Image (cartoon, rainbow, N blue to C red; front, side):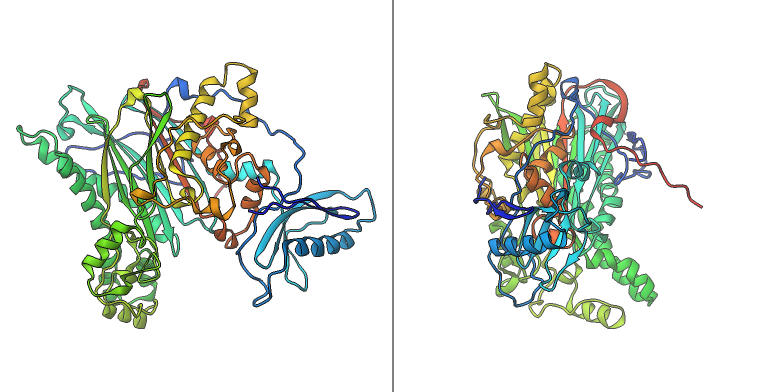
Amino acid sequence: MSWVAAHASRTVRRAPVWKGAGKRPSALSISNNSVRGLKSYSNGRRPSFLPAALQSSMHLRNFSVAVISTAVASGAWYAYNGDAKVQSLATHIRGFASSAINSAHAEDPSEATRRALLVSNDQFYAATLSGDQPLAKTTDDSDRRVLNMLTPEQATEKLRKNEESYLVNRGKGVVRYDIVQVPSNSPIEDDHAELIVEVPSSVAGNTNGDPSTDWNFWAVFDGHSGWTTSAKLRNVLISYVARELNATYKAAAADPSVLVPSSEAVDAAIKQGFVRLDHDIVNESVDKVLKAQSRRVAAELLAPALSGSCALLSFYDSQSQDLKVAVAGDSRAILGRRGPSGKWTATALSEDQTGGTPSEMKRLREEHPGEPYVTRNGRILGQLEPSRSFGDATYKWTKDIQDKIKQQFFGRTPSPHLKTPPYVTAEPVITTTKIDPSQGDFIVMATDGLWEMLSNEEVVGLVGSWLEQQQSGSSGSKAWLQSWFGFEQKKLPVEATNDGSAEGQRRPIRQQQYDISGAESRFVVEDKNAATHLVRNAMGGKDRDMVSALLTLPSPYSRRYRDDVTVEVIFFGQGPDSRTVEVNKEASAAEETPKSKL
């Protein structure tokens, strides 16, 4: 990224280029007969938990520093002027600064200054402008736009608005999990759900004498072409999977020679839950709509089918200590585990599934021989990036169905390359990992908005550094100050491995877009929520101007520089057993007072 300083006061100066939850959650129980009564939690308060070593005692405050006005980004964004040629960045700064000075009466030295984000043609950059008039929406003849720049304090407030943290005091190997969402779309197209299910030994087939087992579910959903599919998954996916698991475990428990299902049987149950739900979304909805012959019914039932969503679900059985990670799409899960050297190692638990992933390209070409457009430019039929997802019915319905839906209700014209659908499936790929709670393992689950900005190793190293700060937060003023200024030149506590591309994972493309050198000194530890900590560093970390600028950009234009981001960090460990799950208030957004209903 080109970094340019621009200061507009009484005169114009250009600096040189620089590089640089409403409800308190509780565990639920599965009866011996069914899984009815399961409830997915999202956009509210949910379960969670962490050992004493992870409980932060840090007290953070905003630190006022003088920050030079710097450019935030350059390169392709959105063009307001149609075919107008992109001028140089210096010209934009000079031209806007002059007009801003005149309009703000810059000859008056008592004028206040303010931070603003300037948007013009294919560039946007930060500047300090004189005058205190509001700049929420300013347009001149050249169609340049100016936005009020968020202060570092406002940026932090926006980062933490949707953060949640839970302490899981159940003595079952999970101690805490942190969640955050930062939207780019309006409304956000991501979603998430979490659930802890207490399963009686008669179902779980316990062999250790424990009267019950915990089934822990965490899921993130990356919606596209709207939010309706991800919202549907938030409400019902875990329930669909839990019902299949319940049937599988009960069948095994009824057989004295088996007691617990095989790993393959558990995988099959999870896949069945995914596939059945997608069938209901995509196919059952069409049958109901065609019978009802109502546009209102069509609008309600077809919305989750016409939009789409990737799904990443983790299932942890506290008895077997097996972690199952099921992915349909390009969200990603990684495991952080302490290595013999004392550093953390990053292990990918999923593979990004897109039209450009070699294994997915091979599968699609085998399933659709003689169709050269089945994948083109890394996209299905040259259009859709994820090769596995829920919804996205235009890649699953036959042409006849799509024509009928369009004629009678609404819909899009089928792709001219549509020949042998379905091209996209919701069947997940599942990995199994044995968790060792005594070693302090953790996993990070996130939509691709995070992985576009940080590598696997950076994410694990950042969580490792965050853990060190939590453990040293009460050791004295030195650790307390380090939480403000980052860890100077100290390297992230993670062992270097490959960048993940060999396993079908994409590199963090935003680092190239922003011209980030990879220096680890850009990272900071300022948040008590581990998920928020990751997102802050993904958006600039120590560079507060970068963080503020990326969060200032409004929807929909912000999508060109950052995606919706949903992150969950789950910590495993040996914790107390009070059979409770409680909100970790110091790492959760403050509760909003509910408005009275008339």
